[in-house]
Length: 303
Image 1 (cartoon, rainbow, N blue to C red):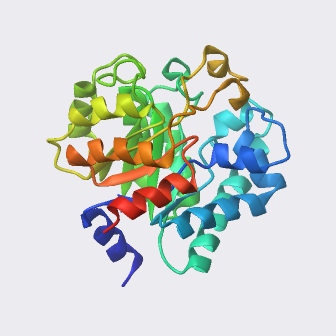
Image 2: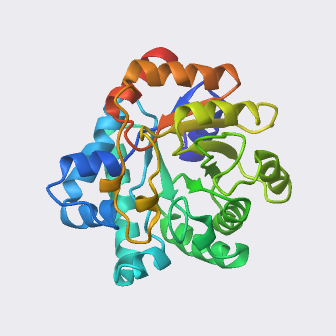
Image 3: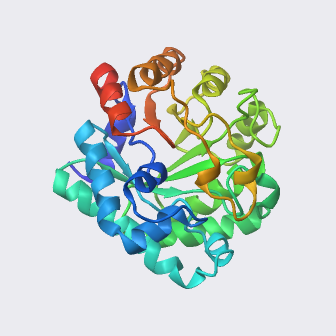
């Protein structure tokens, strides 16, 4: 079976299990102190850790490895005097994920791409056309390696539109994932209602829609607002208590974020059941959701 055929099969299965968070897993295993380019610098200096995390997720039962390229936009690297690493780090992230998949013997590789500007800060993002150029550039680099693109943690309608528009220029399926307000899951972090996002997808359609990097309670609210869409959808929540104002600063690091103590694998899987009850078929984990959580999702829900 070819890789394109397998991708179609995956999204048609009852439940597809994605991997969990990469950045926080790498920080837990790395000797380096947190800094703005956390996962990228870990990959440069300790690439074996990235492969080990991918392998742990595959061994837990995940069907997808997401490349460690979330932060690897040219503009985000330039903010930290690392633009010269743009091409090499993107290619390295793809090569490591593919190597893990090949060692495991099965699975798909998703080209993971976060927002430009800064996570949770749609006010710092480029406009739709500028964002499309940035996403087209990243996805072109990843195209020879990945099976599809996973555009992550987009916080506004314009961010989502620019990402989708740019990624679709490179001939691979596009999964779009947005982050919602932790206090009101019916809205994106920009304050725009999910209904505005759905209107945008009419003119810029994608192959799957997900919610990520919000607390699971908010995602449960969000999922209820898209249960009638006609493409696969799902979620992968984070395990933070909240997104602090300190982290939202341009040079903020994950050291200003606190993990919840109540979100064990069993409780996380209970939240996933709520998403599945609304029709979700793509389930995984984001920051602070690790291999043990994925293993429990597989135990309960994998086809």
